[in-house]
Image (tube, rainbow, N blue to C red; front, side, top):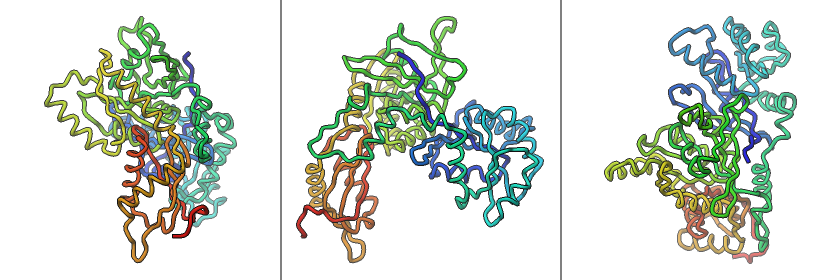
Length: 472
């Protein structure tokens, strides 16, 4: 069965140069880390990030300065990328500068956006210290029924803007959450009770596996090989540009749902499978999967986009397997060089299983699927409180947390706070003094003890006292 997955809404930030678009982007995503699509023909001027407001998730696109009348050069390319973002977006946030007031370029942009944007909201930025009604009056000429005064730098008015978007512009999306994300959030909200086994299949019918990577890494070939040539069904129709597709399939008696981002076309009139890369589709697939297979092309090395996708997977807390495709095309020296580069570029994914494959010839795919199964099992693992606490005490006995001044943090007990990814909550005293290096030590320790290969592991701290433990 092939179906379109429910997806997160996409917000595009558009405006002339220097009106605070990137500042608003950073505010909405709460991070300066974004996936940058730097491929020719894709863009180096759009940035993609993930945001969340309560239970509402969304994707934000930041664009370069928009000059609609530009005909050539960098300005024309930036305008082209801004137009692509408008096409991808469900809501366009048109940003203007409240301190400078209405500019001729704003009028040009507004004229074009009215014709192309599906939903359009005017956000007047840099309004700190100014009366909103006075500022908005300067932009009445644009004729927008919905206008918001805000300060992206200080955060003033940003919450009201996003609240309004979800309440009025994206009502349908507020009711559309994938079953996967809902089940993951339910698990994260409740710590498993001791002795109560977690039933993965009670929540999820099949493991969702997203095969992601930059164009020509071999995603479509891997999909063909896994499904069988005769089963490849591909869609390239209006409305699917932003939608990841799910395909149910069975491998060695186990049910999987493949989350497809490759944009395949059925073999027939087209002589070869054409792969289209969509950043939004890739992000949607990551969010709606249990396990991500990050495809790399052995012949091309590890690029910035590869690292960006890997960072997004880690930020989303998804289990991951790194699959290096076309491995059989390299000689011994090239293989050694690739491994060195890979370890340097993706050192933050050291917990991930590394598989060397040939999607075209089917080599290494059995090992790949075993790694996927292992990563899924680790992501959904149940970690009993007694075993976690015992592992914590063993880790502390081996290496105590360093003192900070006269205090040494006291780690008392631990329990599980969620799955997919596993969350370990540690209780104790003076936990705000725990350095990052010691947290990494504990992460590595828990990973080794519980064999959590292939999944991120998160540690949260709770300053409290164990009511069941005697005072030391």
